[in-house]
Structures are given as structure tokens and as C-alpha cells.
Length: 235
Image 1 (cartoon, rainbow, N blue to C red):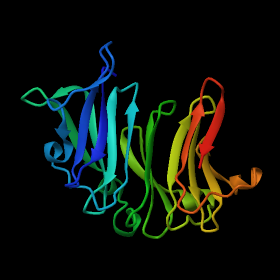
Image 2: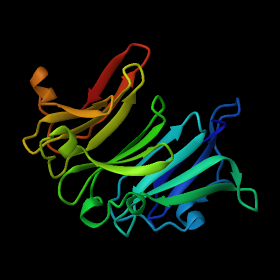
Image 3: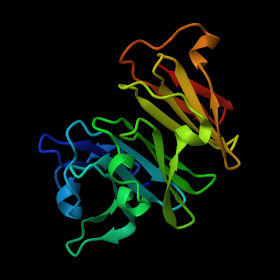
């Protein structure tokens, strides 16, 4: 996109979006002219204490998205559609209560200090937000065919329960048309949930392939390389 945004949660628990320009010159922060207090601009609630934050770009729609957990315990999406501006010419960020949209409220909303992961699945034209619910199940909020829905991935894939402090990572793989979620379970094993052609499945104990369990409190990162047609998970 001509402009990208660096999203973060500030010391007042507000979500900030700092514009980064890509106009042919070296990328530069447009500070402070287009620095947006997205909490203030959209009227969305501040972030909950220790809320996760994730973001993604929808290439074909040219929209930008930031998700976090609000002080109301719900998952919130802040999004920017192309060529939309406020009356004073600033980018028009808008908000969306995804928990309310999907009915995943209360015990189905994120537990306290839940990790948060999100991705855009360009091949399927779908959006996905992943978190751990209060009942210790892995939940997915997804956008498909114009509306938001919810899914219990633990139930759909027959997954083992996540560890209390597990991280989460998710990514889409275009060359295989698959969606992937990784986490650490109660026994300390690295687990994969993956989707293909409408069905969720589980690949158990990936760490046993190379005999190295994740360290306690390890982070996770993962991605697919479309050029090399390979998958990568790092811990």
C-alpha cells in the first residue's frame, strides 16, 4: 500500500496507529501529522491490561486491520478502508466489536491475558482472529462472504488443551490453500491445527520430529514461503 501503519498500545491503553509512507523514497514515519489515537478516533474501548495486539493487510481490498482485546473483554477490530477520510482529511479508521458480532461473549470471549493472533487468507478472501477463551479452548473469529462467524477449533480439530501461558501463531498458505494455527499444549508439546477444504485437523507433537520441546514461556513465530513452498515454525 502507499501507506502502512505501525500499531501499538500506549501507556494509557489506547491503540495508536503511526503511518509509514512508501512513496518511492525510503520508508519514513509521518510523525506527528498522521499519528492517530485510534481509540479516540473510533470510540472503541481502551485495551485491556496485557491485551495482545495483531494486525494484517487485505491486499485485494486494500484495507488495514488491527485487533485487540478491549476493557469490556471483547475482541475489537479497528480497520481502515481505502480512500476513506474524515471531514478534516485524516484517514477514517472505524471499529467493530467482533465478539458481539459473532455472539462469542462472556465465557466464549478471550480469557484474561489471552494471546491473540490474526491473519488474512487472500486465497479464500477470509479474515481470521485466534485466541484462548475462558473455558481454555482455542477459538476463531472469521470473516467470510460478508459476515463474521465463530468457531471452536479445539472441538473442530480434537485438539489437546493449550498450556495456561501458551503463545499463538497463525498464517495462511496460498500454494496449499491451507490455514495454520500453532500453540503449546498442557504437556509442553508444540501442536498444529490446520484447515483445508472446510475441515480442521490436528498434527500432534511436532517437536517430537526433532526431539526439542519448547522452553517454558517460549514465544512462537511461523510463516509459509510461497516461493520455496515450505513451512517454518520458530521457538
